Length: 212
Image 1 (cartoon, rainbow, N blue to C red):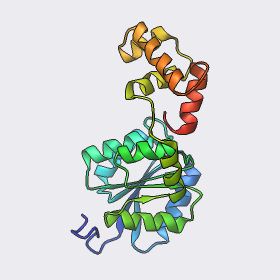
Image 2: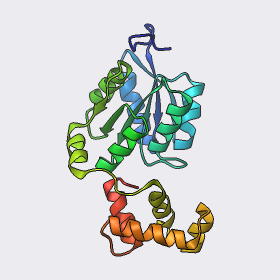
Image 3: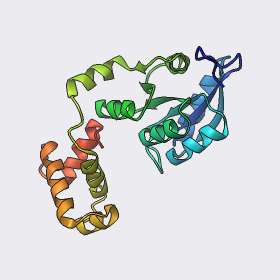
């Protein structure tokens, strides 16, 4: 358990790694194990396994990728904050998109880093979030400010995500418990807001910007 100053009572900081690429996950674990005050106590390859592992292993800091099977790292972050609010969350991703940064912070992340940063920066971020600091890649922070807020509503994102695999309106409506007319309206708004020509292009634009 962390002490009142953000420390861990003299024991190593207990870290969870959630990353679907085995080689990347093992490399991160090996690098973090070189730090005397950090201990990787759990590793998972799926986002929907992260919150349970955090609770089971008394994790101080969870390091999450974004794109994982089962659940994104952003959604896993929100789940961890719900079930284990004292655990800090660091998002470490290949996808340095301003929209992802905004969504991660809204989900309760304490840090957002890109994976091409030196390993020492990840270790430092873990220590800093335990002290109550927010750690954000400065280039991404500037880009997020320049990009502005995500224009898509939560429901528009849901419908656009459901359309990403080419599903027809009837299937999307059944999956999300909406009428086909409502689905058409949401898709139309999403296409308009992304300045796209069709739903496939809207999905691509939204993903590139980290809105989806």
